[in-house]
Image (cartoon, rainbow, N blue to C red; front, side, top):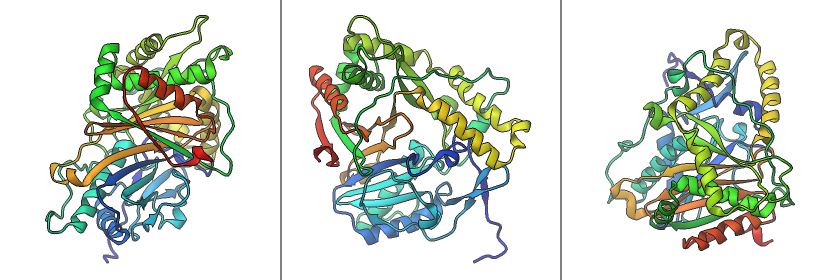
Length: 423
């Protein structure tokens, strides 16, 4: 070991600065991406694959440190976290001091590998970048006669820039505050149970239907979520508050970025109650119009530039971290109920040709947050499109309306869950 080598450290990106201040057992800010292989997972091989990969992935090989003014990342250098067979519920809080100081965990069950990431590290695109390479490395170890490559694949990014800072424009307008949204209130599971419901369908069927509606697949799914909440809880009980669906937007295509760190903003689609009952087509048109009005580079730039302007403000920078933490929690708690739910799309996941026969599918899901007790996560692989409900609500009315409308539109859907809905 080179004792003279300096340990590298990194500033947190603008989005990451939020998470250490608000995370805890009840709001973990952990998301999961899972890959299902065509064979049972060998624990020892998975651990070997992780041991090989972590030192090569700079953005994951870090631990979180607390400075006088900000949190920061420091190169970790400890052995990779220990792989374990999945037990308990997904997206639990990651206690770094029990995880070799790492901010992610890897578990497995049957043929499935799960990557769970504290959002301070990266967003969904960074998570895909990691789990895809982990699957490749595992398959190389499991099938040495088939794969000879030892390096990272060409599609794996090692770019670790702070794209928020690179694209920040000064002198942007004030922040975009939102009033309180309609919140779904119902009986929660007991004992900290966390429900997952995966709805699998055909991309080709979805494209046909969404073309007829004149909207994108993403707009269709956001509209379907709003429509299901509308019928299950909202209609006639809105109290003047809108259904507001938060939609994270990947900024990389807009700003020519390949970073593996967080680089997204959140926009919101709104639906207000009306005297007459709205059809799905009417709701879809309103949701689509709401999203499209915000999906332009200038507006997205305004959103993150306002946040960055607070980060670089010399007056605010001078406040010690404990005061920043108090302020961040106050601001977050006030804004947390501005959305009814979140629907996030991690996109279409590509796998290199030589590995495709071994990779059967992907799923993804996110954790709960204040006021949002049911959320949706989207991903696709090949022709399989998966919408995953993550929820702490016992009642499945929203999910039933969702599936019913899919069926009405002629989209066949298979449903799998993690079992908590059956008591």
